[in-house]
Structures are given as C-alpha cells and as structure tokens.
Image (tube, rainbow over all chains, first blue to last red; front, side, top):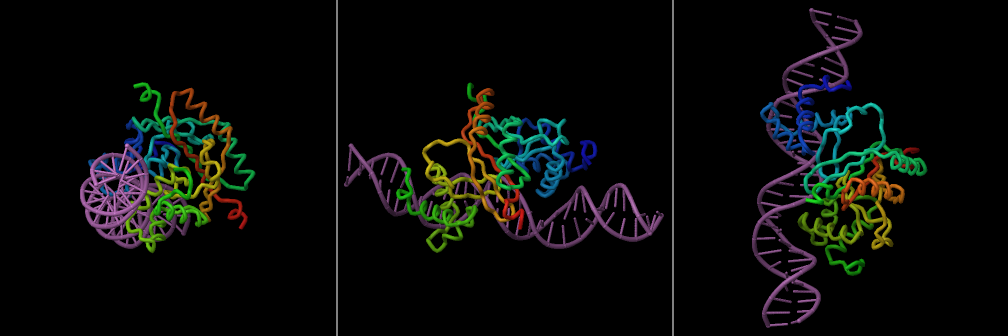
Length: 134
Length: 134
DNA sequence: TTTCGATATGTGATGTTATTACATTTGTCA
DNA sequence: TGACAAATGTAATAACATCACATATCGAAA
C-alpha cells in the first residue's frame, strides 16, 4: 500500500485533517477535530499517524510533539535525503527543505563512525520571514 | 554565571546526575535518583534543567525526551556551530559532533529565506558501531 | 466457500512527560 | 534594613503516548 486512495478510513480522516491544516497539529488536536467522525480515543489517532509516517505521507516534528503533512508528496518513494524543518515559533508555519550537502556530511560521519542511521531529524526553531518583519 | 562551581544546590545535583550517567536521562529518572537528596517534585528537576541548558552545560534530546551532559564542556562560551547527536537505539549511548559544513548550509538556507533561527537540533537515530557488530 | 491469518478498529485504563499556580526562602545590594 | 531578583517547595493539572484486551474486516489458501 503506497497511495492515498488505499488508505483506511481512519488513516484518511487523520491525513485529511493534517492536509487541510495550515500547520502542524498535535495528536490530541486531531482527535478533537475527528470526534464528529467517530473518533473516541488517542490510539485511533496514533495508529493512523504511525502508518502515515511509514508511508512517508506525514512527518513528526519531535521538538514540538506535532505532525504535518509532507510538503513533497511526489517524492514518497524516492528515498530523498534528509529533510530539514524550519518551524516558526510565532505563527507555527513549517517549511521543509532537503539539502544534499547536509545529507552527505551526515552520511560521512555515520560511515566513518560505523553508526547505522535509521531516522534522522533536523529541526530549526525560530521566527519566519513573515513574522520577523511584521 | 557561567561556571560549574557557581551552580545552585539543585542545579549541581541535577548536573552531577547527568554527568555521572553513561547516557541520557529523562527528567523523571533524574527526579528518582535525587529523592534521597530531597527532591520531591518534577519542577525541581525541570527548573534546574532549564538553567543548565541556558548555561550550555547540558543538551535536550528532543527525539527521546531526555537530557545529556554536554560532551564538549570547554566550548560553552564559544558559540560553536550546530551540534548533531547520534543516539543508539540499542544501548542508549549518545555521540556528539559538530560540522561546519552543515552549520554553514543551514545558515545559508535561513539567510536566503529570512528565517531567524534560535535553536536547531540534529538527531540521528540508529545503531552504534558497538551494538551493530555485537 | 469456509477457514485462517494479517490488518485494522474500539475502548478503558494507565504510563510518561511537562507546566501552572501559588507560597516561601535565600541572596544581593543600595 | 528594606527591597528586589533568583531560587525553592508543593500540589494540582495539563499534555503526550502506550498497554491490554476485545472485536471486526478483508484477502488468500485449502
């Protein structure tokens, strides 16, 4: 299963909640948004989130305990490099970018130290351009 | 206040707990270790942790909700670049490294997009060399 | 088509991490 | 001394995440 139309009911509901949001959402915020759709318990959300992360459709932002829809849905299967997230602490907007040089440097370090990386996160906290000038 | 000998009682206790640990500790683990020293509530730990992070003596590992003593205590005040953490999911050991190229690439991205970074974290999850061969 | 296994779901309870609110104490310095 | 800033003590609560167990759904093999 790799495409959106093959998502289960709960997975679709959770993904759509994230897709229509203009920023990251916490699991409990998603839960509240889906109460009318029959959601009752956190686990319903967390299970869907886990699958959606497996499929590469969403990301978890570790530093704020929240989740966002992936901004580059076309590249799910491409094994693109590391993704960095810039998270505005004022408006909550998240920008996503990928940098081959950073990806390469991290790989160099892991290779040279024999560390097998499974998942790497880069999160930049700060103030975005909009909020900085406003 | 910048030096260890100027830490308050609670700050010293928390820092020493982290310094003698061979890996990251959660706030509640620290709390339990310090019960005999008079600690009773999470806030006593969290307040000390906040200060120690201000002083650059410890780091927070966002991806595992834990804290480690800084591995490069000599460079507290140097404003060294970004620090990346490699966290072994088997043994819990954390390796710390700093890479000017990565630091530079991140700065380039933030400069070009007008994003003012305040705190950036890079966390590599995986299996360390020791655990990988064992 | 029945049966089996894998996957998904429903639900309550519990575990873990972090903060709020408020009172009190300690240290510094004019 | 008086006053302010920083640190501390404590209880309660909020926020985030998982466990345990029951039930349901769906596809493939017998």
